[in-house]
Image (tube, rainbow, N blue to C red):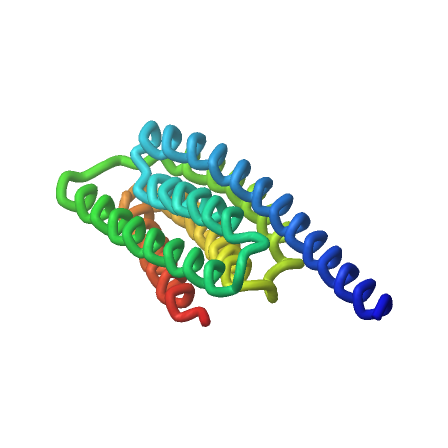
Length: 200
């Protein structure tokens, strides 16, 4: 009887520890993404870069998603799945907003600054690699943590794309690479949202 009770208490302690580790990781992810959203939205506006603005909106979506995941930590799997679906829906809305912004820039024109695109994207890449390393240990956890891992992996891909686009803008003297990467980031986020909405 005592062994059973101790076993139950040990399981509860292990579960509490795991939830605490998840919460600690998500707080870091939320902080990093919120800070980088502020940096990228200002830099994207100043550099007239659709790619940086799209990446900034991705950071905003991720910050909100990590907040939802943080709320779900330690709760029942059903609530974790609900949080993941909410985050997927949010990503879907922001992805469509990113694509609309690229379309607006295509219609009205813009002259993005390649150097600024590359510099800010490198900073964002470092931040997102740190996020990916933090979340990787939890990638096989509940749906809320799986969703968080998908977001972080997508962010690294997006940052590499903005760096490449910035180099091409400098080399070609043409805004097309910026518009293309803005579109691709929107599509990557759209795909990530679809994957998350399918999580069980």
